[in-house]
Length: 75
Image (cartoon, rainbow, N blue to C red; front, top):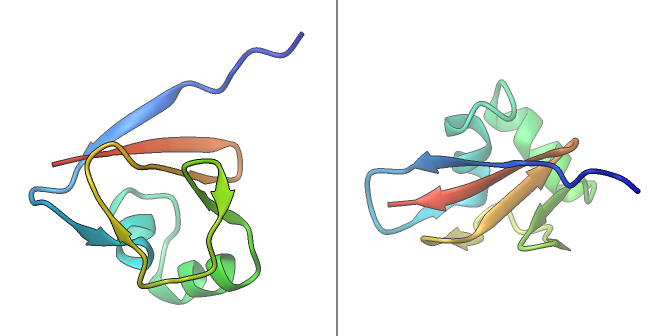
């Protein structure tokens, strides 16, 4: 049996942030360009489902996953 990955939380300081911005802001990727490629290539999940929209709006409680890390959005 595998142990579930712990979910970190990152406060975005507001009500909404776009997926591409969040990846960089949360330190999941180093640059916006890297984020764009990871999203388009289907490596990023939002609430457990692949989302290929860099402009996807994230709100309080959404969970973003990338390379085994999961981070919950907080205002």
